[in-house]
Each structure stands twice: as C-alpha cells, then as structure tokens.
Image (tube, rainbow, N blue to C red; front, top):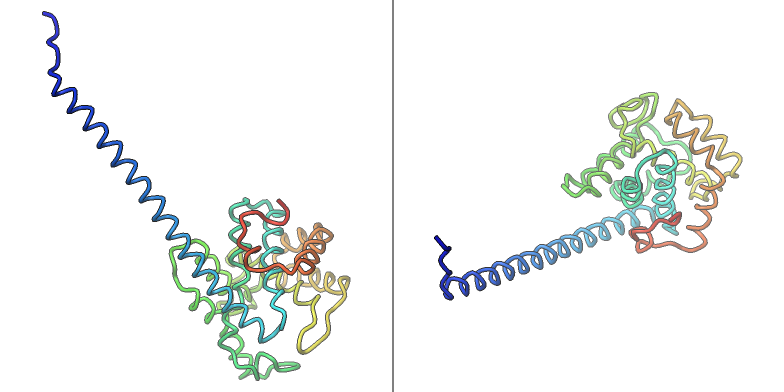
Length: 255
C-alpha cells in the first residue's frame, strides 16, 4: 500500500521542534563559552594576585623583582630543552615565579641577615616552602597545583639532604628540580643585599659542582649544554623589563 502523506500540522510541528532544539543548543553553547571565559578571568585574577604577593616577598630580598620573572622564562626554556611538552613548559613558566612566595612570612631580620644563619634562624627560614605551599593551597586548577608543588619542593636536594621533607632523586617533582637549578643560577648572577653578583664563569662552575649533590645530573648537563641560549634569554628578559603580562602571554620568548 502507498505510504500515507503526513499531515501538514505534523510537518510544521517537526520544523518548530527542530528550530527550538537548535536554539537550545546554541544557548547552551553560549552559556558554556561565557562560563569558561568567567572561570579563566577568575583564575587569571587569582594568579595575578598571588604573583604580586610573590613579588612583595621578592622585594624583601631584591628591589627590582625581575628575578622571579627570569625564573619563569628560564624554567620554561630548560623544560623544553629537557624534552618536556610545550604545554608543560608554559605552565611551568607561569607557576615558577611563585616558588618563594612563602618568604612573605619570614621576618626581615632573618631573610636579610648578612652571613650565615644560626640554627634558630635557619629553622625559621626553612619554613618558607611550607608557608608558600599553604598560601597557594590545594586548588584544582593545574597552575596552582604546580605552583604549590614547586613552592614545597624547590629546596629539596638530589642527595636527600634538602628540606622540608628530605626527598631524594626522582622522588622530587620534576618542576621543583628544574626551578631549583634556574633559581640557583639566576640568584648567583645578580647582586643581593648580602653580596655582589658572581661572574657567569663562576656561577656556571658552581652549578656544575652541585651536579648529583643538590641538583639532578641530567638537568645540570642540559643547563650547561644550553648555557649560551639561557644566558641570552636571561639578558633579554632583563633588557625588556618583562612583566606579569609577558609571563602569562600564550607565546614564550622562544616561539
């Protein structure tokens, strides 16, 4: 038997239902986009607030604040030279500058003391990784998870003699191992309140001397192999007076 023709009303109903469904899908898509935009804006504002807190901590030890910007770019470059993904390296660039945020809780008489700290002062100073990790919290956002991880682990040593947990070798998160080397090198090559900057040659020799002791041997080898490029990057960040806006830009200096 021939198929019966569908009533006009049914056809019109189907068309209206399809239009309504298309509108619902469009509205949901717009709401999803706006939600993501809002979440990204909140995350950026949170990041900027924490960055400026880290900057305040850095001002207690360096009145330019450029050190923590350089740490971000040096850590990113080192991660890429080590074969890490672009996504990992970019996240590290944004997280690394907050590594010493816990110093905001250390008294100036300890933080700025010339020379060696006594045992009581050392105990106070050694609290800054835990303070930093606590400030950064247990956020589900990957950036702050990595920043907290770095804050807590950047004074651990490859030989297990670091603090606060005495971790050794690959038990130390890779992010912390990378930032430790970048931080050490950059701090050596800048003036501090308690000493003048070391020469590049001396700083590089001091990095090499800590291979297998404070630092991951593979990271030290990679750093030394790529030192000319890392030095050029460091100088570029300083010359251009890079800021938070440059740090969170989706493109790295090497892109």
